[in-house]
Image: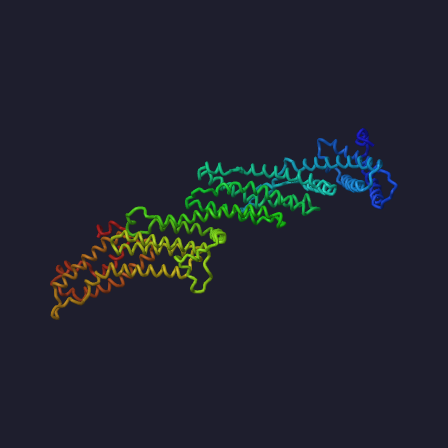
Length: 599
């Protein structure tokens, strides 16, 4: 029966035609067995070929609806018949050529090829279905229902038909054609999905022309797309390839790997364009760390077969390393900015915490929110450059107590802190007053320690010896301040030298009280304007001053007050009563320019 008889079949009961096809399968099986046995008597199975040919014609005439999926049981027989036809064609190709074999092979081959074209057409039509996504309802964090899109979306019926077509085409030797169609159309669908996500294929030239503000927006969008790919697109594509090629897992894996690699290559163009010989300021670090983390998540995507995944992993790893090196370069600029911060020869008013100290500690605190990522970045940097920061003798790595060696990032952090210490020490020399110099050093030292204690991440990386050393320096500066500021004041209250020839000299006594008043007034006037930012440090300073000054002054006044003739004379020289001292000392370090005026 030829194509001119197709109309007759369309007008007959198709179920009856399906039963005939089932019967013809038995005939085909016997024919294959006969060919396999080497039987020399050859007769072509024209009836079977007629049925297949007519069935192909019926499916081809279905233009307005899907060609498959109307009668799954009947279609199962058709697919089985096509597998028999593939076996017959292969067997005929193995036979010695004669007119009968050649005639039968030509006809079988022609029908077989027509069937494969039909399958490829329908396979592409199903894959190219415009409904690639489906709305699915999920519960949001607040319990409210929200709608998301599932990608890629194919109905169970479509998946079943594509699976059947793919299996039949591969069985028939048309794997290359099937895979070519699948890869091309899935790449097209993925490109369309990226376009929906506002993906811009930014290259090196584009990145060079763009301002940082524009790049920052693109980085945010790129990271969002990457997260969508790693959490949805890749898993969706793996699931689809496994469904369509379930009978051929190696093919499914190969196709998924090819798609993942192609998509990744496109996505990597943007971070590659950012790692130019371009100077990025220190605050740009965090965007590059975000990119690094997105690439790290990408590498976790399970591609499957190691050999197939090599290109995917190597490409991603290379770009990730470049981004990491850019991050190292940006972080190193923090060191340079500290080393070169000589701007201005005017010290910070009142010995307060220097802006450089605040900036550096806040920067480090924020950076340590990326602690694990920075650990990886600097570890990789050291491995690739064949060096470790531990060789730098300028850094006190604090491993003498047998604790584990500090990580490369921790060592880098300590180096930054040491540079900051050296810079603050240099800036302290701008103060003419030694007392104020020590206040400045204490303010900055305590600020650094407090910021480190507030951050679990920073505190965990700074070795104990480093922390002990900084605490000791603050205590030493405290003692130096006490000595520089109050030793001369205390000297005026020394009982020694007050007596001459065994008697208290009023002249010496008056001079002592006069000198005390001058020194104490000057300290109150000056140091009430000074600033101690940390409340605990301020309290410690006032307590230490009070613990020395108040008892000493009370003792001195109590012993010598009676040597003045009257209260008027006493008030002239004993300007402050012992009970007033605590209140006066409380005015110190408040940054208060009006306290002396009020008093």
